[in-house]
Length: 214
Image (cartoon, rainbow, N blue to C red; front, side, top):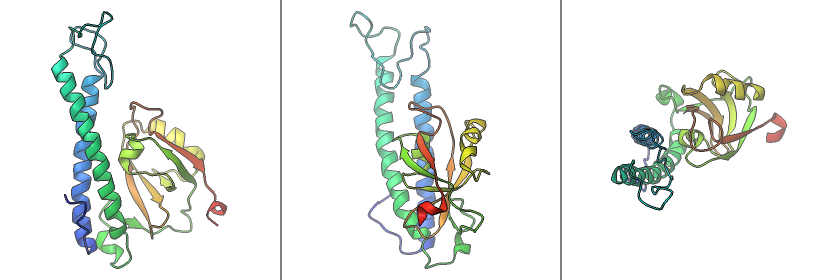
């Protein structure tokens, strides 16, 4: 997947974006499996090695209860996945403006869940994102600082974000956002979950009113 190859039409962009989204999903699934293995107790019931945990015991010797080769291999693979994930997210961000451009009709792409949709008068931004932790569920979903929330699952008010997130732990749902300099709102799939950082999403929301956009 050549990041320098820019599709000229929406149809080409959609094909490339579908490929990129599939790669992203595979990378995230593999990373989740690796993290789960590293965070599980050893077969002897010992402390999990974790993603960054020490591999030596209290006396400075290599841990005898850990498959050191396996752990190092998994950690190395996870580092490569994180690098590849950043690249594929850059590719997705590169393709989205093409897909969301107004040169072709939206109807050609309405079946794609990450396509563009118009913001109606009833759907105005009610929250904005001020921080996104690298590698967080929000980051992996494609949310970035500056995104304005138009719909969060079936929620359209700021106070509903936190309880809705708690109720949908480990469940995917769609978030409709407006991104500055993009012609239309679009949707992203978000899955709240426990991860190595704070919160279930790893991002920060603040209330947004129509006055903030003026």
